[in-house]
Length: 156
Image (cartoon, rainbow, N blue to C red):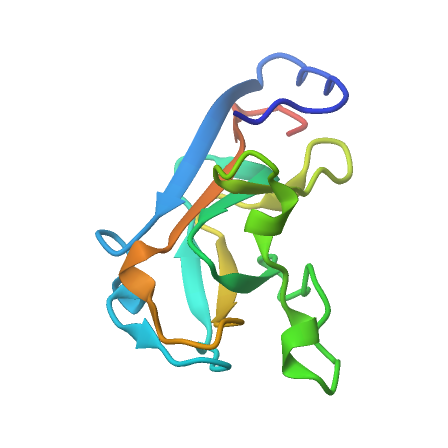
C-alpha cells in the first residue's frame, strides 16, 4: 500500500481531494493483449484519466517483469529517453520492492504530485528486459494519487 513520505496540504475549500487508483491491465487496455519479444519495446500506450476531476499522480505500481518509461500529459519523460542503449531509457519498478510484491516507484513532485488535468493522458512505453518472450496480459500498471474535485472559485 502507498503512503506518502510527507503529508500534503489539504486543498482549500471548496476543493476536495479523493484518493484514487487507476488500474490498467489487459481487460481495459487492449495494447496489453499480445506478447513482447526479448529486447523489444512497445510504441506509445495512452493511459487516459477520467474527465470528472484533475489527478495528482504520486506513485506507480506494476506487476510483471516489465520495464517501462512514463510520460506526463505534457509529453515530459519521467525517466531517461535519450540514451543510446535502449534499455537505459526504462525503469523496472519491481526492482524497487524487496517483498516480491508489486514494485513501487514514488513520483511525488510539486505541491501534490504530477498533475494531469481532467481527461488528461499519461503515456507509457514498455520494454522487455528479459531473454525470453513476455506475455503482456500479465502486466498490471497502477497509478496512485488524488483526484481533486473543484467547484467554481477553487484554486485547485
